[in-house]
Image 1: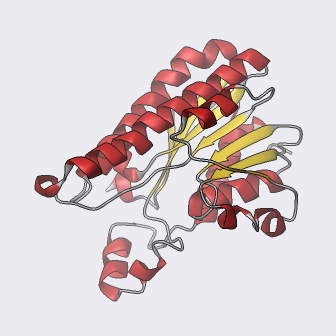
Image 2 (image 1 turned 60 degrees about the vertical axis):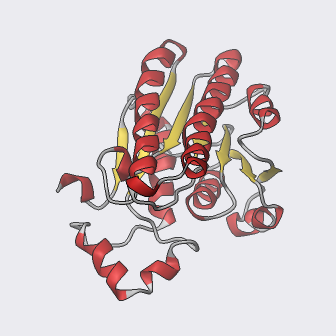
Length: 244
């Protein structure tokens, strides 16, 4: 019962594939009324069928002001999973302005605007709420060819902590989930490369590859009444990678 989300409204961004899709499905199965947002309609078309329960879908871009306004105007919002993000591997000396601006726009600016809009809706409704920012282990450490990505995820971790302090008076909790590399449809080809798989396993003490459901389970917990005293923290779903 501690993970029962019946009657709560949840928004999940980047919900078409991978981590976001798993979060939307698990939140819906826990009883939440889920609004799943993604840019590609075909990715959203099968969500309800996979979840086994209805899922409301919005084909929208989280970087658009109109999408932010729709979130802010929701009459009820209890859970926001701020998941949309991207990465491009480049050596720090090779990072071009287009890549820099793209990652900052989506991973930082958009994440902030969505969190701000979600918080505004929660404050107006007066029901409290849970904001969950999907960060990364790169929000706690650094790594080769990930200078900009790591920078953006460190920013997300800072936003998470500051919002926890500022929104506590409204009973709004702010946390992040920081996964290690996760096997998704996008990363699956990399794991077929023995060298890549050996590298990934080498940095994870548990010697297991994370799946989207591992991240979704953490999100459901942070969204639930069972986490009512948890705010301002980062739940690292990394198999111990950042403990090394």
